[in-house]
Length: 213
Image 1 (cartoon, rainbow, N blue to C red):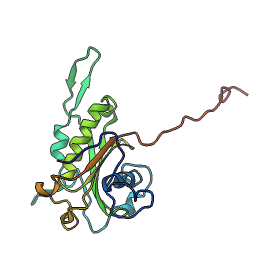
Image 2 (image 1 turned 90 degrees about the vertical axis):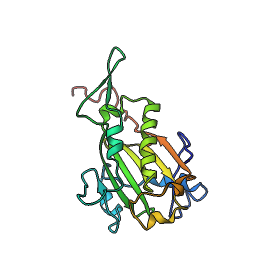
Image 3 (image 1 turned 135 degrees about the vertical axis):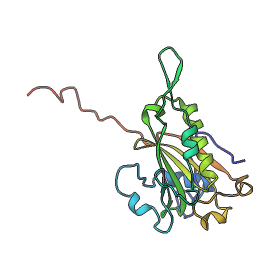
Image 4 (image 1 turned 45 degrees about the horizontal axis):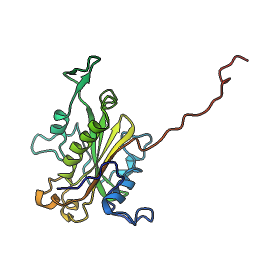
């Protein structure tokens, strides 16, 4: 089974970076995933980040003739869509999902496959750390089965990363999005962490910013 280091920072690098050269492969990739552009992030960097010779798969990508991989539809439907109300009870809300969408692509920067999952803040922000980590583990395991690293975006904020060392599974580079045989991922090392990974400092405007002239 893949080993998970809760709260640690990590990743699988295919490129050499002086800042990550002393880290384990999964930890180095984690660090690189922190910086990769996303279709859910701010800016247009994703347009050049996704490799043109690999398929970009989204939750809207379906095929009438063959399975569309990587598939996150089952995970989407299994994840909780529950509101906790004032008296401590829980109510399942029909028609709403924690997962808004996902985008799977091949990164040109680190030559690795990534799935970005966007979650609904109305649900995500109600979960405690352990519930958020459980969601990351479930999505990360799904990505692992296809040879993908997973990132979670709470609307546009990166809040979760699940990175693995795929360097010992060369077949992943030859069959984009294909399901990886279980025997090839049985001993893969992975690391995962829940963010936020960026701290926003509240600017100090002073007491008289909005004082009348």
